[in-house]
Length: 256
Image 1 (cartoon, rainbow, N blue to C red):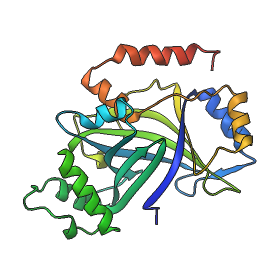
Image 2: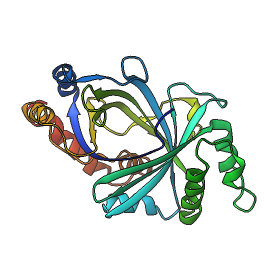
Image 3: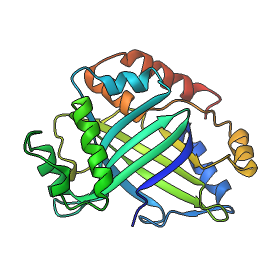
Image 4: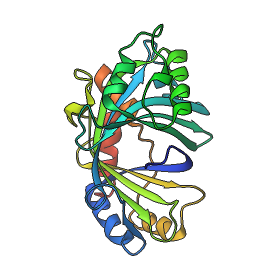
């Protein structure tokens, strides 16, 4: 059973595929493949929520000290009878807190398609009823509605000696808003250059020295890479020239 509540720090990097391949090779003595997927590889497809005023977007974009977002997520190929996860992801002073509950995908759609007046989170078959109540409150408070689907191919690793250290690489990052059924699979427009990879280092306390040295050796620089904001900007046609300029800068820095 996947973790339902956890807290950690996340460092994000935007790297090239060459850096990704070298990093995987150099991490090998310290890391093992994630237990999910084929040698740590699986696909993530998420339905994100927003309100008409784009409050979630502006909270994230303006980097408020406390910000949160809601998503409905599935892994690999999942049909209506399969398992999905409602998740609230919160960030406070650079610490990420995630609260999630498993729910059959068809039940999640029923909840989303039922009016506020008649829906109740207690009626659904979820793994954690308390978290479902929190999700329902958050959704109602912000008047959240399905906004877009974001998907990517993930390659995930866990540290052999420190189970709290996790490293993930996200490739083929795509988004769409014309089809919000996540069981239809991972497809859409690339919102980050296909030659680039989003690297996330997830740790409870601090990044170990051996990993810090590898990241420095490969000249991996931390960069903000919000999947939510970048996808929404592409789909809404906002400030796209700025995003493209940032990508060109990364691609041309030292041939990385």
